Image 1 (spheres, rainbow, N blue to C red):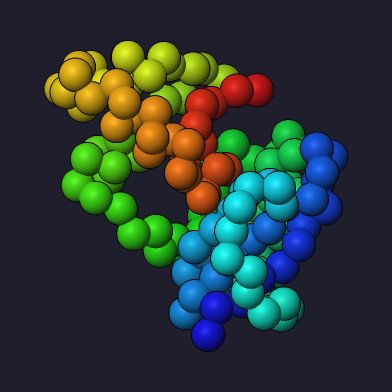
Image 2: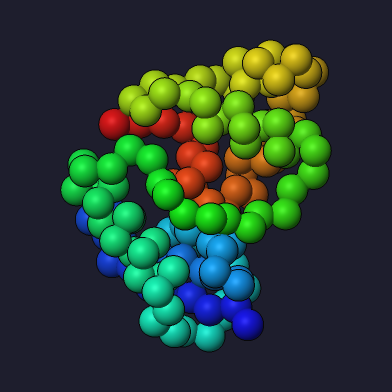
Length: 127
């Protein structure tokens, strides 16, 4: 079963979803998603605590198992994004060049727009 929990943050409510003890979604509530059954599982509580720590400035990275189905190029893109140091940003063109596919600008943009794990796989790294 898939479950979800709403987390109140300083920038509005976020949703965390899980499947078999892995996070499948962590994004603002406004982002379109398939709604799941609300439940207070340990993994959702852990995710909530890490999100709260992040917004309190006490955490820069997440220690959560995630299950996010992606294509090979999306996996390359998300791996590249996760290598960006906290507090730094990269352009879409820089990410495409980093994965040795400078022509893949549209693929990078599309992957980032459909990323359902915003804090775990950030679209950009900002303080």
